[in-house]
Image (cartoon, rainbow, N blue to C red; front, side):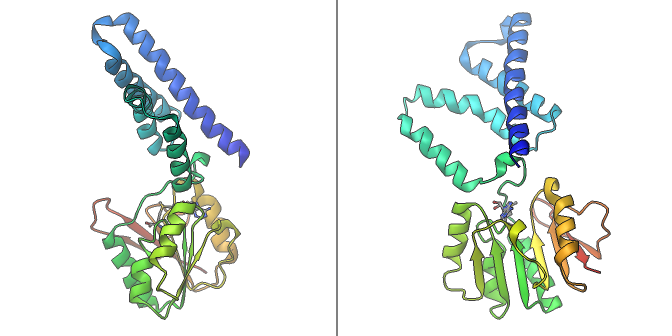
Length: 251
Ligand SMILES: C[S@@+](CC[C@H](N)C(=O)[O-])C[C@H]1O[C@@H](n2cnc3c(N)ncnc32)[C@H](O)[C@@H]1O
């Protein structure tokens, strides 16, 4: 885990340094392109994002590289108090817990995806359901409303999203919001398990699923297939992100 964290940070720093070096080179070759600080910042952001892409950092890092220096300079120009940096860092850590590992950021499922999941769960007559990485409850809240008799375990390790889900489910006794990593959860008790994570974790998650889930139970992965597994069905949802559910029947 520490090794993975260091590798991700090294890639991020390398992308920033390459961005600076490329910008300096370009400024030497084409000085007419650079008028004032903002042209430097824009070119450096683009060069760092391009370097991150070449270093195969996940897509959300491009946005971080693009916005890093503009945010620093805007804060300096606006003379914002120093405690604000710390507060922002704390807030981002509480939301994006673990993203620095290069694993899974917080993206929210659409209402159409929640409806599609509810339809599957109804068809399956699921009694025990788990969501691995529940975010702010975009899936479990509507599910709990539609299926009050279904026992739902919502695993979420990021403190702020967990708190929001817990608050949203405060009147839903069938939801158990668990502030823990789903890697430590035992999946044999669930009829249906849902996850919307990232390609990085799917091989390891596939191993956990096949080790722990019961034959006949259903695993649904939103957007990211388990490598080399053949889904029982693939459901394409007509939302903005064109979400796809990969549904795997456990053998
Ligand atoms: C892409 S978001 C999906 C959120 C929600 N499931 C939805 O569909 O709207 C992934 C979530 O998984 C959480 N997560 C990632 N790894 C986790 C882990 N090992 N244990 C618990 N939660 C995790 C992240 O904090 C994030 O909230």
